[in-house]
Image (tube, rainbow, N blue to C red; front, side):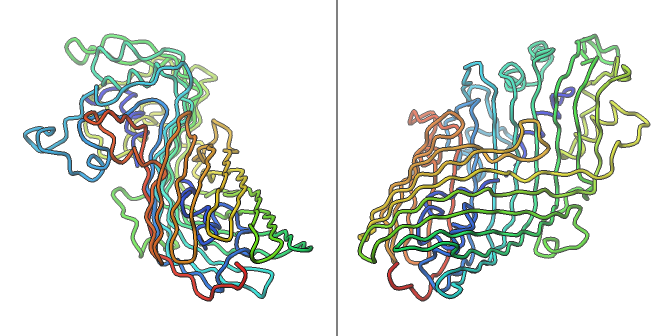
Length: 476
């Protein structure tokens, strides 16, 4: 049953998002352009004269609110191959509440879904002291941060009349953001210091961004009461008494598909610029000795400025007193843009937008890395990514994480086992590279977990690609 404001929140946060992880390949010395998203200074430390990424991609989901325990895996769920016994007669999925198990620890909850496609990209050596890269990628993200357990519990059990009474009247703050955009990046890194086997590289990536779609609902506080709905027998309406929030969404054509034609269209509703900047220290006394690396970078500085609609609700004059939401308000919803339009129409009948443009911030993060690589191919990488966006920011966040990735990595083959602490949970993955092809996951159990095998994952992750390295540099 589509019911009241919580329908909008539930649909908004479940849309399908952004990060630069792919830890099994991004931490490899042979990762080429896939390393640049972690630190642009790595461009000067490539072991190839020329590296060509043909195509690679990543899909990821994580949260700290529920564990998945359906009788079928998340892979089956997302691929649409759920067995017929778990479907209704009309073929739609019947997803029971007990297919998820709440994690109730009294802490705010976060959830992220992201996906990205890294298109044709190239990295070239510039002399013996630098590197130049050109990268392309499409990124999509949806995220909820800072939601209370009581609010999410009410959404989880369903939006029936009874569940409405479980919605917290005051403790209901959260931020929800989505963003889909493409980027073209130009990277240059060079040596700024060198002495007896030690080198320090400085690198930067300048990015041109085209935005296709974005929505934000930043709820800083909502007070309401449940009242009888006189328009429906035994009905209940949600009456809002105070709202402190920001609502924004793009003026994009409904059901518009992102295609090669639209990727470079000047009519895209969003444009922006971005910047990555980093340092990379490398120590190797001679070609037959181990290599030590330490890096620090700040990535995804910038934003996309969208043509769209933004409403700021502060209720300074009490203008929202008595605004009611009924089930009939959401009966004909087809997509998330309609949800947001319905919400703002109920709050602001006849009111013009506060702004006709808004900014969607990039997932700015601090990336710290330490790496050891022996001449025989055995290595280990430590990666720390720290979100630098404020919790209430209008923009998707890079989920903070710590990862340790042991590996065996030589010219023709590579195997890595990333172990990741993310969203107050630990996952382990596996990545395999054979020649130009690689396939991996940073959450192996998330791909196979279900009720029957007792594995209850909090997300999934999978990536793969095809890339070629040419002209191996002597000594690397």
